[in-house]
Amino acid sequence: MTHKLTTAAGAPVANNQDSLTAGPRGPMLLQDLWHLEKMAHFNREVIPERRMHAKGSGAFGTFTVTGDITRYTRAKVFSDIGKQTEVFARFSTVAGERGAADAERDIRGFAVKLYTEEGNWDLVGNNTPVFFFRDPLKFPDLNKAVKRDPYTNLRSPENNWDFWTGLPEALHQITIVMSDRGIPRGYRHMHGFGSHTYSFINASNERHWVKFHWVCQQGIENFTDSEAASVVASDRESSQRDLLEAIDRGEFPRWKLCVQIMPEHEAETYRFHPFDLTKVWSKKDYPLIEVGVMELNRNPRNYHADVEQASFTPANLVPGIGPSPDRMLQSRLFSYGDAARYRLGVNHHQIPVNAPRCPYHAYHRDGAMRVDGNYGGTIAYEPNTKGEWQEQPAFAEPPLALNGAADRWNYREDDADYFTQPGDLFRLLTPDAQQRLFENTARNIAGVSEHIVQKHIAHCTQADPAYGKGVADAIARQKAGTL
Ligand code: HEM
Image (cartoon, rainbow, N blue to C red; front, top):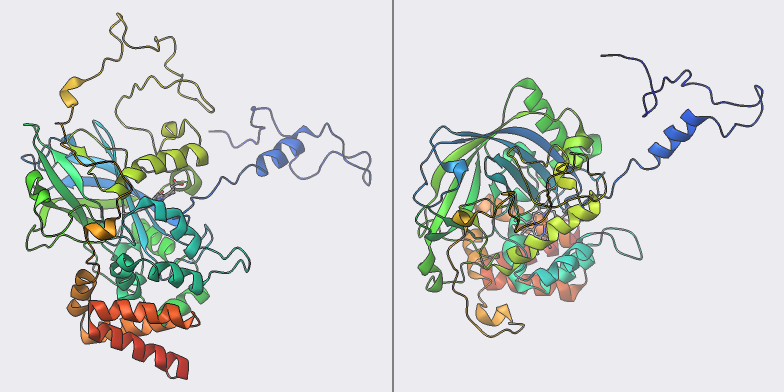
């Protein structure tokens, strides 16, 4: 390994201190090639940040199978107890930009890429099991409501709560975000959820519906609003620092992977719509089954290379794991690959952190930044008589029965109960935790127009009268300056 400075083309750089000038006080010369190269590269070093989840931290590790679920899925990643698969996980906040403080009240992203022998499986989840709404058409609006106001360029509680309260189905997610879990002490201290319903296909080609849970082994720990304020005042990167330093110390965080399994036919008769992303499946109806454990044990050597350039997509599915008709998931199957093609380019799958660890032959060729030899002289069409890259019918999924007339169906008419589950969650909280929920909400909603505040109180009241009253009282104290 040489420590000699060269240009990107490998030629020696004789002087990295002084630009080339005409005389000691004269202007610079265009033939200062090193200066041109250095400045030009510098101007191109920032890539677009993720539209959501821009601030994040990542680490490599392993997933180890501990429970047998081969009767539900033929996914090779689960084929044997003790089997290990390399993973890369990226955690993130959602609303803040790439330089935002970590200890903000927000959802946390929980994205895991498992480099399985039959392709990459990305479980792109959050630290909450539900989401704000059920239709993907609202996703860009969410983004605009929680990010900066176009006029003030400030984050706007008015916009945020105006949007949230316009969607009664958001109350479940709002309740989680306003609860203690809204500010995890760091990424090591939170659960993760696949959130959507996915499908498992087993060796007999039978389908089950499945939900994924990453159960935190470090214990759930959160910051209160005032703790978070003092953390942010002294350290804007508290979650990055916590994860990085724990792994450097050899304290490797672990999460158990558990699944809830629903036989395919039960989806038709379950007491609520099982593909509704604003609801959780009852663990009494569908208990958690332990499947494996993820340990994160290796920090990336370079943040930009592995964390900033990582791209996840729920469309990275492997044989034995498939999507469900959840319309949010259906939209995400398109959205992430499209975002990666914009943010990183059409060949983003070749970037080492994104590249499968198994051979891949997609017939995709050319495009900007193709650096893997581009399949050399191998033919690029199919069908062919040369035996190249044949489709693999053994992996076809069983047919999925669909019915119904095409229309823009109003999901609120399909299932209008958006209050039972947030009410259940509220009643599960201890009185102290309920009080913090009231007060966090009051601080967060402070200054928002009265009609919006009243709408939120009305939604809370529908979930549980004590929830509505608690929030109303805390808001009154906030206004009186006694909170
Ligand atoms: C990031 C779209 C809902 C979890 C992103 C990005 C987009 C996006 C465009 C940036 C991707 C990039 O630039 O690489 C959407 C759409 C949604 C949706 C259209 C709904 C229709 C969800 C839900 C979850 C989720 C429900 C969790 C269950 C994440 C995570 C990231 C992310 C974890 C960051 C991934 C990373 O670490 O690179 N989303 N999203 N999103 N989203 Fe979503």
